[in-house]
Amino acid sequence: MGGVVLSVFGVVIILVVSYDFLRTTVSLSGTGFISRTIGDVLWRLGSSAAAALERRRGVSIRGLLGPSILFAIAGTWVLLHLVGYVLIFRSGRSLWHPDTGAPATMVETIAFAGSTLSTLGASTVTVTSGGWDMLSMIVALNGMIVLTLSVSFLLSIVQTTNSARTFASRFRFLKSATPDGAAAERIEGLGPDLLGVVVMLTASPLPRFFVPGDPVMDFPTAIAELCDMARRGTLSPSSEIVSALRLLGRHLGKSSDGDDLAAARAWAERHTIVRASS
Image (tube, rainbow, N blue to C red):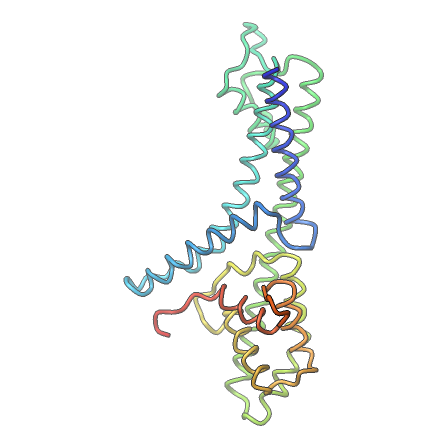
């Protein structure tokens, strides 16, 4: 009975983390519950710590937040997969020492599952039957999928982050270098660029955690400034850039009254770390 319970728990853990992993990496519809929770909690803690360090010590760690949060999410995926497979292997006499016939210990089971999941396949124990051998093959395939999709996912995050920083830089250049009368029209010309970034963010919101050291490239603060311009009527309500702001607020922000611009402004505020010099 105990073996069945372990096996069921292991399968449930693997299914839950697999859903979260696939939802986050390939669904193009946001993040899974586990990834979203880890990201939000670490962002709240990390952004508060970063602001405090800059204010009190003059030390900036904002550039570490994005990579650290991604590492924590990826590490959780791997750890939960490992826990699930270890529980399944421990549910029966799955692994042994062929020369002595002694069953594998817990440490040896963890090492076997880990080496198989990493596709290394190096272990001091071996499976006891064909069924367990089939499971080890599934573990290796699972590990290969996780590794491959994680690399592709990382590349897409880098691309989205670079696009967001490029947009913010262009917006600030036009805002500062263009006469007031012509600034709004030229900024509205950035509508297609902003729309492209917003669509990429709706597919994967994790680039929001990457904070540049240079405020010129800070995307959330650019969004906040654009929302203020739209509120003042500086930007045409029918322009593409305002439509992109509303799209961001509708998909990534939170608004109880359906005000997409207010939701976009709130999203920008949540992902802005106030600088010590501000």
